[in-house]
Image 1 (cartoon, rainbow, N blue to C red):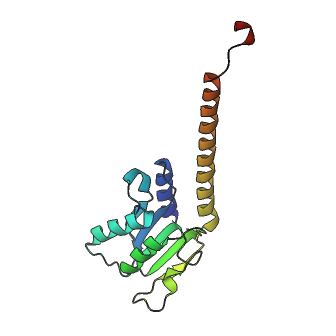
Image 2: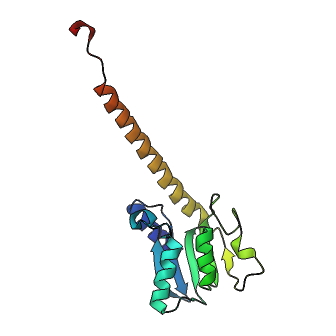
Image 3: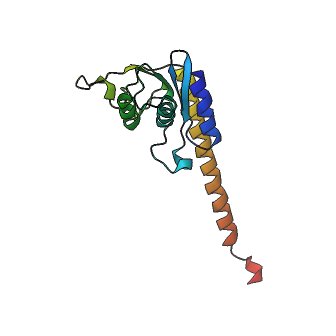
Length: 168
């Protein structure tokens, strides 16, 4: 999970939501990924998807049986679907996602007994650290947006300042 956290920091440095993922088989790191949908102009460029694509390329197989995925945030439905299609054996995630989490927070995509592949899911690994990184990122983003709004408002106010009364 520490490697996934390091990947999340790469996302933060790129101005993206700090989510990182690492795919392993046994003790071998096969691939890693970090969130970059903004920079890639790709709504599917979630950390999990990036790691799954890289692993499939590295192993020359779209199915990744026996592999485990470590991710700092609970996967969404899109990522859960890809995880199941790739036949990932186990997913370990850090922070829960109360808005789009598909491992039990909003829906549990992995709990459907009708599916032909079942992935073991473990949540809450380094949960406090993973959640704190996300909370800090969004607090910084809100602060920057607020400061930008205030700066624009100050510029607008300076431009429309009425002339002093004695100059009329």
